[in-house]
Image 1 (cartoon, rainbow, N blue to C red):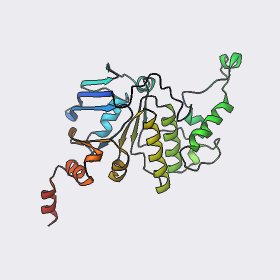
Image 2: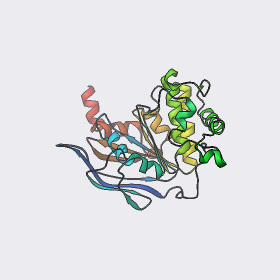
Image 3: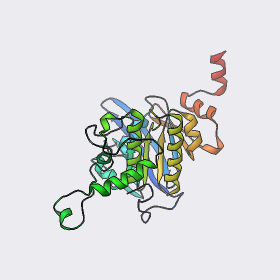
Image 4: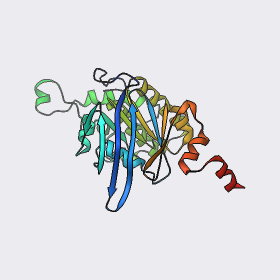
Length: 270
């Protein structure tokens, strides 16, 4: 396992539709969090998903990653409708997600967290008896975390003793290593310094160039404009705009987020 080790044999060619959402709606009791959300994600692209707080971005990625099902509509992966009943099903299909709350086991080491639930066992009889191949996991973990460009202590250090930025680096390294088809990053630059953000953007480009699709959720539009190929704008649970990043501006995206034209914004300032 490393940032380039995910198999390419079952990936779609870059530019082809990998994931489609069709009229996805999600209700929580009488509250409709998503309403008829429709968009595509293409292999080998970075798709920005932006919007104000409460726009529905986190709900969308929780549906894609199997945290909970949609109320109606379809999630289609590689042409097949998918109905996840658990996150493990999405993981098995090649979808990895880095959430804002950085889900790590604080009492385990860096290496153990990277391989959590996917531990390597020793070859032969020892492996069949359940003995873990700790040296192999440490070697791969060292390679993967080094590629994040973020300084980390010894890999046997307990995660609970790390800074927020270091924990984020481990989570990102783990997800980028395992992503075969789609990587979802929810506010990944939180807790990261300037240099660390630059390294993260470099890694996202690397994953994209390997043919993996990336969905980037971020309130930092400078990062979105720097790294994405397309941008989907959500507001109040609906998709309100889609842009080619090269053909739009930050101002245009902001206008879509807040639901105002440039003239309206100018009048509100004056």
